Length: 175
Image 1 (cartoon, rainbow, N blue to C red):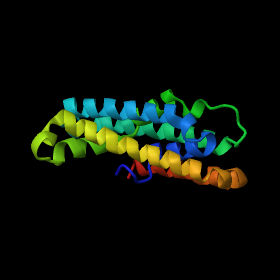
Image 2 (cartoon, rainbow, N blue to C red):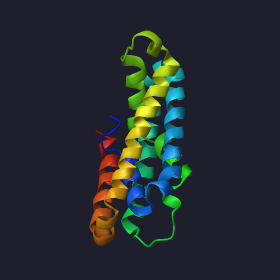
Image 3 (cartoon, one colour):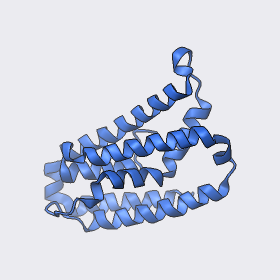
């Protein structure tokens, strides 16, 4: 689940394409902090979250609106666009806090998977899940940087594809 396409991985790839790996670290750090906060929230409120359709509905509405907002900005951006506001720490944090996929990741991972020995501790499982998910976004950022030259030549088409994937992610929340 950490490496599959989703809102965070698509934004990480777009950031890598546009800004490169190093300049995208703030977005990735925001995503990592968001994942950590969601993991803590999920661990503390797991039973309530599993039985609260109103919370999930609110997250779907907020998450869909935010994904559509990001899709619009990715679609409109150019390689020479000087506004990097879409790839900030706050964007990464907000993206994660509204990312239903990350909530499901932690609800499933913290509740369903049992590890033996020292890794059976809830805090160690949380740390392992944040690390694995963060490695996924870093990998997508690196892949975005690797295709940077290709992106500069074909940015219009790639921006449309990334924007459509973000729109698909927004629609997919409702399935």
